[in-house]
Image (tube, rainbow, N blue to C red; front, side, top):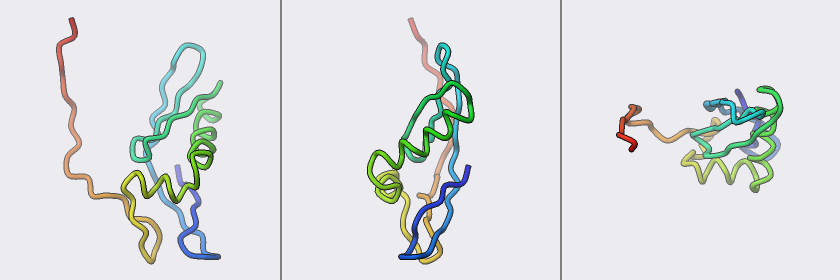
Length: 93
């Protein structure tokens, strides 16, 4: 899901990030792991739209990106380098 963000005064760029959507009761919850932002809505599309709104509400989207590890570059925003993506298993008693 691309998000429009300012990269230089008067210039607009885009970033792409992961959106995970799951159900929680009657609501759909959207989570962007790279931004560490979540939001909910009555539909999948509403949850995704609220996610972007929540990122803006938390400050500016630029601040959220910087806090999430993105770096500002001449061509836009560069995400931090992902070294490993894996799954872990624990026993729940």
